[in-house]
Length: 248
Image (cartoon, rainbow, N blue to C red):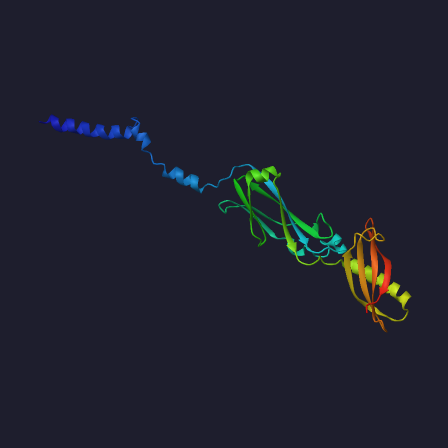
């Protein structure tokens, strides 16, 4: 009778040892996987490789005028400079950010200007690029890769680009000199200057024209002149074409 408790004691000690030792296959399969799953879900869907996305935002005006050759210089894109650019993945995770550059004249110099940006980002399946408060544009990685990681964004602007103060001043000086020759002592000043394109004008090879309106002290009290732009290097010269022409 005294040996029974001893046997039971030994058995009780062996059972826990077997269950904790494992090795029968069932013990390994029962290890929880929830921790691993949670870690994978929290990790962004990106890789360690990174590259730069280069973008160009071009503003194109509906109307053209010769002053478009200096659209950027006259402030035609002034409000596009220094805008915040953000790039997120398909889930909204921020991948990179930056700002737009100083403005330059666009490919069509008489109608557009542009700003650029370059932002380093990690690789991801999908990207959303937003410039300022404009709607974001989505791109897939293969799409960006096929275009050498460059994107082109554009927007339209009503009216014509701002005029260049230098050209307005040059036309004003030229027409006042001509008007004084035509009607000495009667020139009151220049009311306004219109700029336009006339590519069919054989007497003006550049096709870039200015039409200043001059006020006179006596009837007819106003007349319009026409000047043609000649460009030689950085020199812009407005040459007299005809005028004054008077309305009815």
